[in-house]
Length: 484
Image (cartoon, rainbow, N blue to C red):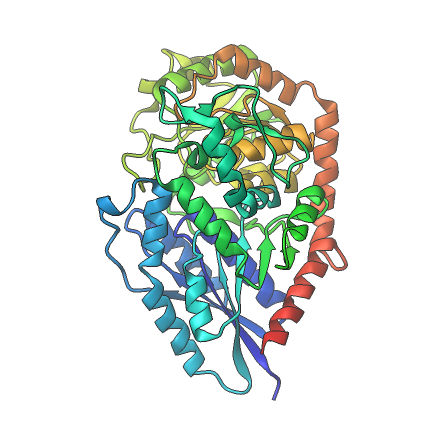
C-alpha cells in the first residue's frame, strides 16, 4: 500500500496569517497527492471573518481538514503590556489543546498514513515544545519577507546596540540618541535608521521587543524555515538567512490566494459595485489606496489625503476604515464617510473617484483599470501587487512595514516613496507630499514600472515547473517524506 503523509499547521488567528498558511497547505497537497493537511484554528471573538473564510475553504479543499481548538480565556491585563505579548500568551494557552489534537491524529496513524511535520507561523513558537514532546518534526512557515526574517534571527545580537543607542522620546517610541545612527541587519544590503525598525522594537516600555527576541531564538530550533518569498525577488536576503545557521531555508513563494474574498466575504453587493465601477474606467488609469485588513488612519490624515487626491487629479479608488477600538479589535466601517472628509469632496470627485470601506484587494489589483497602488506594504499586499505588475507608492503603518518599504524603494527599486518611516502617531503626510508621490507613481518613474513588470514575470516563472520556488517545494516534500 502506498504510504501517505499528513502535515499539521497552525498560525496566529489573523486573516493576514491564516490566508497564506491555507494557501501553503493547498500548494503542498496539490504538489504531491500523497499529502493531506490538518489546520488547527484558534478562535478570537474579534475575528468573525475567520469563520467565514474557513467555511468557504472547507467546501473547496477536500485535502485540507480544519479543526477548531477549544476556546481559552484571554491573558489577564497584568500578564502583558503589548499587543504582541497578548497574542503570544493567548497562543501559548492553546498548547494542551494542540497536543491533544496532534495526539488524536497520531493515534489514527497506520503504516500507510503518518504525521510528517508540524508547521507553525512566526508567533506560534511555543508549539515547538509540543512537537518535541510528541516527536514530530517542526517547521516555521514565515509569511513575511526573508529580509525581516533576517532581523528576527539576529535580534538577540541586535538588542545590545538597541539598548545602548535608543532613548525615550516624547512619544511612546524610543529614538536614536544620534539621528545618524545606523543599524546593520545582515539580510539588508544597506544599514537602516532606527525610524525604519518595527514599531514593536521601538516601544521599549512595552514587552513586545522582548517577545521578538524569544520568538527569533526559537526559530533556530525548527527543522526548516519555509518563507513566502522567491529567490529572484530577495536573492541577497535569502542567501543571508541561509548562511545564518544550520536550519534549511525553503523560499516557496509567492503563495497567494488569487481568488480572494470574492467567494466568502459577506459583502458581495459591495464587491460587485466596486468591480462594476472599475469596469467603466480606462486601463491603468486608477490609483488604488488601501492600508490592509489592520490599517486605518485618523480624520486629520484622511482630510490631507482628500486634498492630495483632488490636487493630483487622477482617478482613484480609496478604501477608508475607522481606527480599531481596542488592543485586538479590527478597523471598522464609517457610517457616514462624508463626515470625516473635506466639505464637498465626494461631490467634486464623483466623476473620477470612488470612496468605500472594506475592499477585495487582490481582485482589485488584478483589474486592468488599476495603474498604481498606495500601500501599507504588508507582505501579502506586496506579493499581490508584484504578481499583477502594479507599482506601489509606499505608506507603511505598523509592524515590519517600514522595513518592507525600505526594501522595495532603496534595496530593490520596485516602488516609489511617499514615506518610508510613517507609522501610527507620526506627523501627518501632507496633501502636497501625497500629490508628489502620486505623480511619480502614475506619470513618471518608467524605470520602476519596467522593473515591476519584470518582477511580475519572474514571480510567475518561480512557481511553475522548474522554477526556483517549484524546486524549493520539491526539496521540502523530500525532506518531509524522509522524516517518516
